[in-house]
Image 1: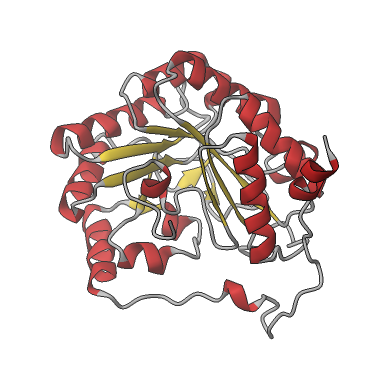
Image 2: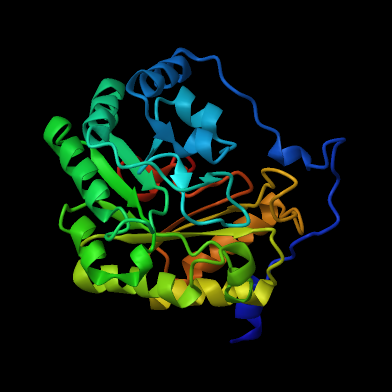
Length: 308
């Protein structure tokens, strides 16, 4: 790596930043919205008895996204079989799958008039297929009811089972997303039931099976990673064929979760985005409040970049 590459690859992640009484820097302040579109999303989600990652994972962008008339639907129930150190989704033995869930999600997508829908899921290690069948059924239901709507699936690793991955890919999602989450050294602490190598393998296998479907992944910064480790993770994702990337700041959901190691500045996220593009990522969303499905339609190429 040349000296120039090193300067791009290792932006200054300023650990000494001003914080308020709540311990957060000013750029992490968000406001909930009272916009009519926000109320509409809330009402439709409640009416259908659906779960969203916006609520279940305490996403800081809920106000912005719901006010824009979008939401990320979380299927497979609201209880996860895994206990990740950063995630606010409840870890308990899940209930049986709701056979009507795919139709309910499709109804909500239709009612909201979404041009692009993101469907994610809890980990369902209790199921033989890891929940892949429910994801496939949900994509089919949306296609039947809203054939013009683009669909991104944010999947679990399905324990690396290729058959489960095929089940989802056979429904032709527009984007397949699976998050690496953190650097290799921190995997056991951050997501003990997952594997860095397995996640990369899932992404690489998806690209091999369906090179026509873009693959996407995300990293969370602020959990103790070093600059060189982040850079290595970006290179590993590119080697796996990933072309779309999200990078955001870790926010501790509760005292029971992993502590925040540092606040990454907006300027540092800009530098990481530049580095990622230099490695060949087609598009990147990076910033303190960016999450996996943030502006997903833009990264997928459905809507233009408002900053372009």
